[in-house]
Picture 1 (cartoon, rainbow, N blue to C red):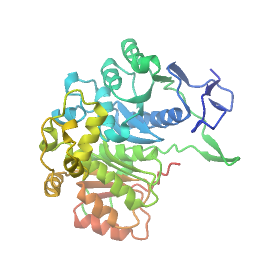
Picture 2: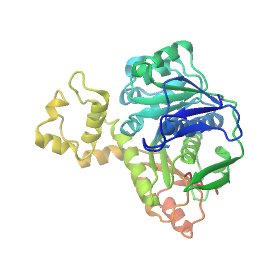
Picture 3: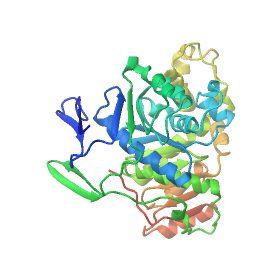
Picture 4: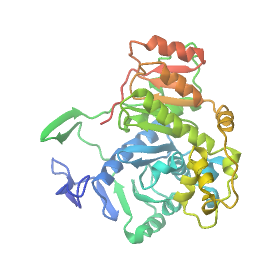
Length: 392
């Protein structure tokens, strides 16, 4: 297939629209079901690069959940604890494959943002993974292959209109990439920077110890940032991104946004949240929104309006700010990556509130010493990678 005509571009008024290769070569993809659109393909191709690199860097199956050209979640296929299986709503599916664990993590880190995602899988989609995808609201999936039964499961979604893309895993793009903006062509070399544990050798803090698990988390954070709209910051723990702040003009706003998402991930594991009792037949998205509201400030409004009965079987007790802080203070050993240097130590102060212990950032700010001093104050470990990861 030389080209694929699309319904429209980013918006319905942007026509005509198509994807093709300028050199005339065949496209490296097959559409097995559905009619993916312009934004679907942007998410699919960015996500595929991300999971391919995660697999190469860690040796583990990887998955990503993309929305509007930035990942809402990314993870590798480490086993789930009972608590994580519960908050990711997969505890009823029995033993999951490593790839299914990766997607459960990627989808579950920020379920509100992942609603209607485009999924990227590093490995052949198996039945275990397809069963998770089938019951989530999603626009489509890209993978290097599909088990026959898994493909049939996915084809049942959206009355047969679910977008399923198969990509040639051996495809290698040209070293130069181009795009047109306002009728003017921009050209640059592809970002072929390899990210692995060797990027973490230049440790600039007094504490020099980064355990193996934290190295994996930092690599996950950095590779995720490579495909996240800048400015961006990523918190990671236990083999997955737990909070991604994308597209902010200020670095500290990235750190705060990603930190809020990481806090939300942690708070969802609190027994007070796990014990919430929902009304029968509540939709998954409504349940997820209710949990976020309960964790946030909006629950007081729900109580005041007396509409909690539409969501919960039993009226939950208020989750006080003091209780939340006590639970969050148990968080420790999180990793944080930044796509560019931290210009002020306020980023470190905010990261500390979300249990960050390990940091990787390019370095190069005139205030590097202030940032290092702040890390030393909290016994954090920080590595300077020397590599910026802007993505636009």
